[in-house]
Image 1: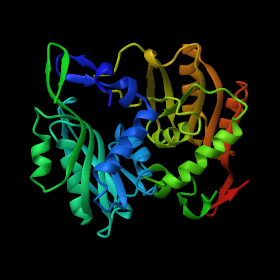
Image 2: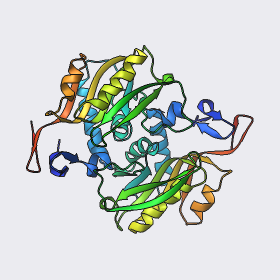
Image 3: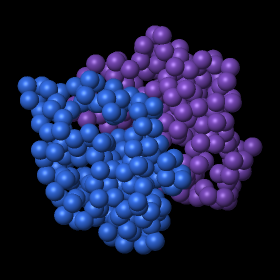
Image 4: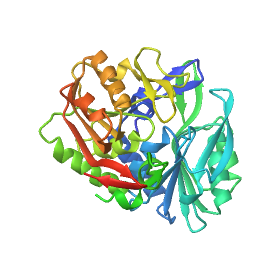
Length: 185
Length: 185
């Protein structure tokens, strides 16, 4: 897939993909992404897709169409006053914002009979993904796998997920960022 | 469409639709919604769909598939540090949270040649929608229409949008909330 030409590099560190993934959304590309996740997880049973707000939601929703329209549940970072108070929650440290935030999923929407595919846009340190894994463990749902659009392989996220025995599939793997250029594996 | 059986009423005022629209997402239903928006706006040219984070994103993304996969752009409420600083912005007052927030769209993603369909989950006071209309007006994009999933017709949103000459289509129109029951039109 053609991520490379459109990604901008900020401070030799942050990959900005606002033009197709995080602000403007390329729906044709998202369908390609969904199809590819289906191919990679064709061996797994999936009854639900779980993601995290905000950037994971559109990718997860389009991807769900390739998994028999299973429901999507997104973990909330900014829970409103009308959210159910009976939730699974986890604390996640954000490097980009240098602070902790809490993610929540209502207990109504996860159960031990669920087989969950986790979908997210980025994997770097793995903090957000480990937060989702914690929510799913609390619910005793089974984790069928984790599908990521862009992985920064020079951070420790992959190792942390694989240590949990979770099948991890990333569609674009970035080896390094050098002189404002993304080097793909 | 079958919104009624699943909506919960909180304090005779707030309609909680977390089980299919705002937390868990019913992808089959969203496809029905997308098809219906296409039917209602079949007379209009649409080059882009604009919505607002968080709850509008999945509906807008599925709906875009019925409009030739046009790009979706969502206005950000929680802009990260890596967002482009050159933005259109508007201040929106939230009744549910009783405070102002700022919505932003990067100038990169709206242009005077765009013909924009606005999609959102709820219309009540119309504050969020008027904020989006303001962003679009700043960009000189043309507004093709506004598609809403659930409208509370007893608030003033419809009047404010129609005064702008915008075609407004709501799929479920709530007449009133009485004794914890939603009364549909």
